Every structure is written in structure tokens, then in C-alpha cells.
Length: 547
Image 1 (cartoon, helix red, strand yellow):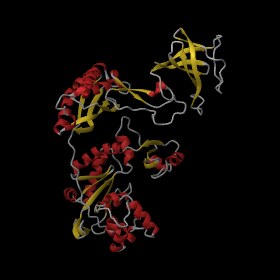
Image 2 (cartoon, rainbow, N blue to C red):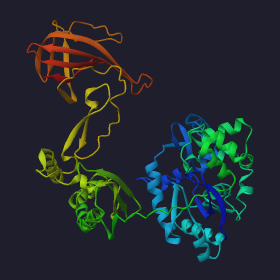
Image 3 (tube, rainbow, N blue to C red):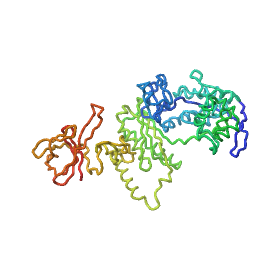
Image 4 (cartoon, rainbow, N blue to C red):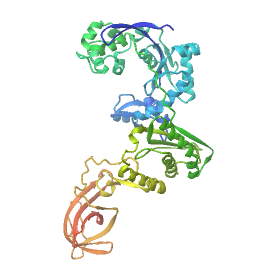
């Protein structure tokens, strides 16, 4: 296992000799799909046809979806046309990274010095593991077996001079032979028949500065240009003279030219393992009373906060995972207006047990708490001249919430919709406002400003009649059967002094079961109070009042 010397351009234009490092790359095919089974409150069954979509394009799919004709780069609607039972999931880079971190930790237990290339792919120097396990192939086999014990099947391994060649070797493996080894000094011959499109995602690998003369911005642009020039393989690209490549594509193109020729001078940069900030408590026997679970989490919560504080950090978002005795799982991310302390952590565990009682049908066997987001402790230290009114308000509301429960203190937010009641969103104190209907979208038929001050949570039933006592109705064309003269609200008759309308509100006309066609009216009674009334198929209700 000797290391071959290759040339690399120096930042000042000189060429230096560096050693090509024998590299082992582990590739987890379709990692975004695998992450769905490892992360989330309800892990998905990978035997189902699943597609992970970003910008309406498929970025990963399961084997069942691939068998039905779904593939990467396919449009979402084309994939659904080929597989009507396809489960479409939005891409989530945070989920992929979060699920990949414990996998890398398990690899580091067998061979330290792992560099994460991207979620689903990592690299390490193979020299040390090969000496310890008795060879490069044996080292790859040990790592694959360790990952297989974690339930990760089909992990591919590539070994070659440099990470780029090792990655291509891993991608060319088959399930029956998951390891590909390129011998020392044979990278150029191995890469020569590969298409130049494999350089399309290599722009981030360039260590050279962006060229100022004729350089392409990305590897994808370079691939398109090479294809138009009749250069279709890496061997043909490597055969071009370095002077012509530098003249036409700049230093970035020269870097990709070196990769095509098997001269990968990148060094493996092992990650620094993050500190173990999470805490977990196992209960034997499992506990079924929330107060018992919360009491058992007190010491773990104090250690959790102390561990984060030792790193000069504070936790602003907390992930709580509850595992039931029968395999049930409840997972949730909690927010805090400022930062968590031990008491707030215990409160979140208790609240989650109360809100997810239906999901956990057996006793709690394990509770795991981990920081979802942290911030520098210096940003959360008290001010020099007192805490200020905001801190006092936060302290008071947090104490009330701790006594009354998670939804004991609510703050309002405005969402979207055509009806005023559905635009009111009440968010528990400290949580991020999540509205199902975005306010910025167009809502034909919605009420313009100024809006009523009092919106009834449940519309009040009223009766609108003419001065002669006849019920006022509105047909589908907006024609009224009579002029409104008075209306009865809560048993009290109110004379209508002025009125305006009707304004139609039409919803879901394509769905016969959920369609709605109503008409709004603004009326002013004899006392000068404004009302917003709705006539829906002959039935009248009061939606709001102008105070």
C-alpha cells in the first residue's frame, strides 16, 4: 500500500509534489430514503414505493419505486404517473444530516478519522484500518458488517488513490459485490471510460480560486461544454493539454482535469466528533404515570443543561423522544422564548406525555432529550442595568404555563383564509407560529380591511327578516328576496339602519361534498353597532362584530 506522488498547482502558480492518499469511501445509496426510516416520529416502511422530492424533482427513491419506473431527476408528476401509489416526501437536509451523524459515530468506533462528504457518503484513510484488519478488502468488510448490524443494508465501499476515484469505484459496485478496489497507480485507467457527467457535482471539490478568465461557474457548466466539444469520457478530457484547459476553463477547470486523470490531491479532513450533549433515561419496569416519568427525568435534565453550559452554549430548541414498551414512539421538537433550564426540560417531557397519550399505548421505557438548536451563552446573559420588561413578562408567562400546562398560555397569530375564525391562530407561549394557510396567498372572497374587532369563535345563529316579517334569502346569482329590515341575535331584535352587500364567497366548487357558497353582509343596527352577517343557503349567522 504505497502512496503515489502526483503534481498539484500551488496557489501562487508553482507546482508541488503531493502524495495520493489511499482512501476508503462508504456510500449509502438513496440515503434520503433511508433517513426516513431512521429519523422521525413515525419511521416509514422502506418496502413501500417512496420518493424524496426537491423542487418537484425526484432526488432519491426506494427500490420498490425504482421497480415501477421511478428514477432520480424525474419530475414529480411523471413519477406519480408511473407509480400511482407512490409516497412523496419533501427533501429535508437537516433530517438527512441528523440521521447520518450516529452512523458516522458507529464507523468511528471501528476506524477513526472519518470525513463526511455529504449525508450518505463519508471517507477515511484506509492505511490504518488496512494494517489493523489485515488488508484493504478486510477493512471494508469489517465496516460493512458493523453497519449491517445496525440495520443498514447495501452499503457500498470504494478504495482508490484519492476520494474522487474511490467515490466512483463505490458507485460502480453491485449488491452482490459491494466493494471495488482500484489498485495503486491505476486511477487514470479506471476513470478513463467513465462519462464526463460524473464531474457535474465536483465543483465543490475544487481547492483552486475561482478563475477570472473564461472559467465556468460550476462543474455542470463544464460538462455541458465538453459534451458539445465532443469530449464524452474522462479519458478524453484527461488527454487534453493542461495549457489549453487552463486557457479555456481557468484554474477550476484545471482542477477537474486533474481529477479526470486520477490525480486527486485532496487530503482527508477528519471531523471533530461533537460532544455528547444528549441524555437518555431507561425505565425498568416501564412507567405509565406522567408524573413518575417527569420525576425520573430531573437528574438527567440537570446534567443535560450542565453539559450544554460547559460548552458555553444554551439550548433554544429541544428534541424529546419517548419510546413505549411495545415499540411506540413519540418525537417532538420544543421551542423556548429564551433558553431552556432544567425545569423547562422536565415540563416539556410532561406536556408531551399528556398530548401524545393516544400514541403511547404502553408504559414509557426510554426518554431521550437532545438539543435541536443551540446558541452562544453570551447572547442570553442578563443586561447590565436590569432584565427589562420583556424578561419579566417572559418569566411571568413561563411560570403560569408551568402551572397550567403547555396550552395554558396562548399568543395570537394571523393566518390565511376566507373566514375570520380560521385566520385566528393561537400558539402556545414559546412555540413557533405554524399556520396551515399562508396569509400572503390570494384568498378570493376574503374580507378586506378594516377587519372587525370581535370575531366569534363559533358563528352565532341569527334571523334576518324584512320590515314586513318575511325571511330574507339570497339566490345563487346574489339576488335578494327582500330588503333587510331587522335581525334577531341572542333573542334580541335589532333594527337595521344601514346595510351593504351581498358579497359572494365560493369555496371548493370542484368537491360536491365540501363545496360552500355563501354571501356576506355588513349591517349597522339602530344602536350604531356594526355586524358582519353571512347568509349560507338560507341560514343566517353572525361572523363578527365591529366594536
